[in-house]
Length: 252
Image (cartoon, rainbow, N blue to C red; front, top):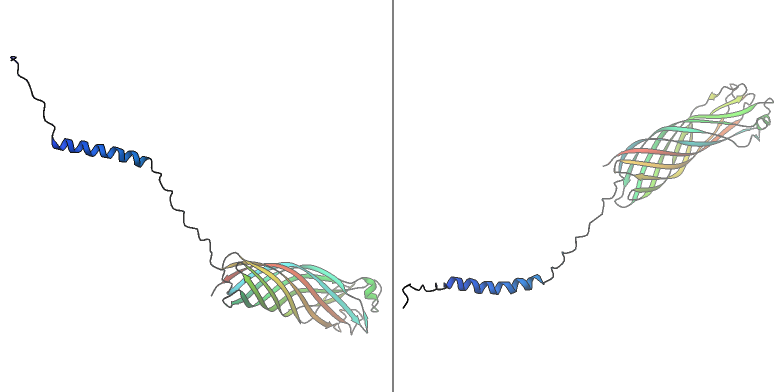
């Protein structure tokens, strides 16, 4: 026997054996899980782009402006100047009320008052045919126009198509040139009709373009010499106008 002492190897504990066995089982599982494809994420939910329909009902006020073409005719003792034309601009205010039946149909009432710059002057030959002095022209003028109309239309959300018709009232002024001054006759009652399209930016702000035909009927020349020597002549005036407007609406 040798003089030095021999050490025995330390015995392996049971817990170490259990840990080693668990590690050996985990390694293949981790390797297999690395080979499994990760499923794609579920598709995103569709976006709902639906917007609330425009509310066309309510009371509104606005401004308008545009262009008009007038046609006049002077007739005396069965002799006529024939139609002669004039043109000009207009600008004014608008007010109205809309009622919607819950669908797209719209019913309403609209009124307006516009200042106009319309003067129509006949040819000299046409006016002389009425026995006026040579070199004389017949003239018709209008300085203001107001209408009160029904509106009926159908709205496709932001866009409204409508027809309109009702009463019209305006002034008709007559004169001969020379000497040139106009005579202001009493306001003349007539009728108007037309159609238009209106676009709603919001429930409160809209813009429109419309056409109106206006017939102010016929007036008689006064006896103050405004129509020259004509004492029994009658004067007619019709107007075609195109205008645009912007309205601010107060919804129900």
